[in-house]
Image (cartoon, rainbow over the protein chains, first blue to last red):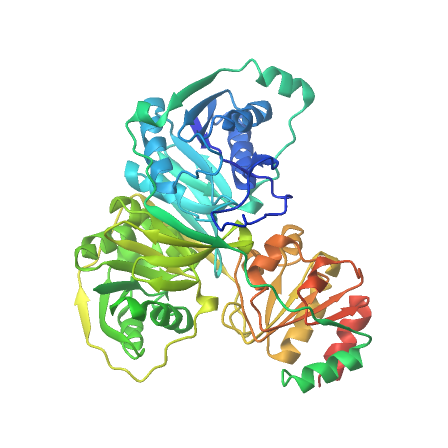
Length: 252
Length: 308
């Protein structure tokens, strides 16, 4: 079984986000970038499937700017076998929308013929939570989103999903798209020898045009602004003071 | 201009709060038709017909639509889509599962977690865990939107919109195996007026009982930070934050929660925030209206008692 894992290069989750003064977006120039944390979980799960003998090849794919090859090298250092970079933007501030990403991924799937696509459930930049579901739709495949457990059994997969009321377990036909949630696993750190080895693993470079996909955005960003700040509160010295403040405010 | 709104229906029951909030978010877009789909959905449909601002209710009952499996629900909606310019839903995990699939089949972008409607094609939504608010204008002929329910007031009731039964849909791509849902008498997290949440500082699943006792005293829902859920102190459906639930109650009490960005994303629109934490440098105090720097193991039982 071949597993395809799409990974996205996003602002590092520890970096404080700054909105550009002109309202055109978030400042990404000279900011530390990393693999989207949910995608790291997807890469880890794919590697574990390979280690368990359920998968024989793990292919990482990233769509975006040329610098996304660093993100792919991280996936290779974790244990992916090879990588495909699809260059679709020149400027780091140009985010490729989930619909266009899903169309490119669908084309990659037609070439690579994986049985399983493992994606992060959302990226921590645009928080759209859409690419996996869109890819599944375009392929006419089954989908299992927000996975916290995954078991591949022959021509189907049993997936436990984190949903509003608790957990839901479903069985999906393979091939399938699974999007992963936080508690599926804890991703490994790449060791230095593996980072060195990853530099020699194959990384193919393509463009969106190679797949005939138009990446023109459907959503025009009118403006990006800072959220309304909360007014500073006060510190209370005791439980009694807290209770009287809450009573004054009519909250208890 | 017409709007198709996918109601939140679970096991035949309408989630009134989420659905009524989505109706209020959508009503400026046009006439709202509510779709209630499920293995049984007629009772939910009758209830949805009472929501003010609803012009029609469609009920689709089919075993294949049970458990809100994405493939069949998507096929049903895509089949109806021709009559509508906007296809919307409350931003629940069910809708987040289904709507992007619908959008892809209609060849349009999806807009998730929308917090404000500017006009029929322009919407606001938070990005970067709520650290920025983006206003986006869609150029697509149809707009597929999920609304973040915590930012909209629920529409009232008293309406009696006509109810029409339509055909169902099914798919053999996926099948339901089981649900693990914790039964609780507490209010639902996303609609509760008061929420008491515990974090890593609570220290264990057993000590989470302190949080639950305080919550019960206040008639509150119980929440948790991601750290507490990851550590196994609390179940996943209690998680408040960027990837969990987004809440905006009148009162939010954060106990032993440091206030990581992704937690703040889920609660910083609460009207009043109380933080109890022994670390006075904890970022949660920057958003708290009332902060108490103290050991939660002393403070929370005392607070529970004194609120009596």
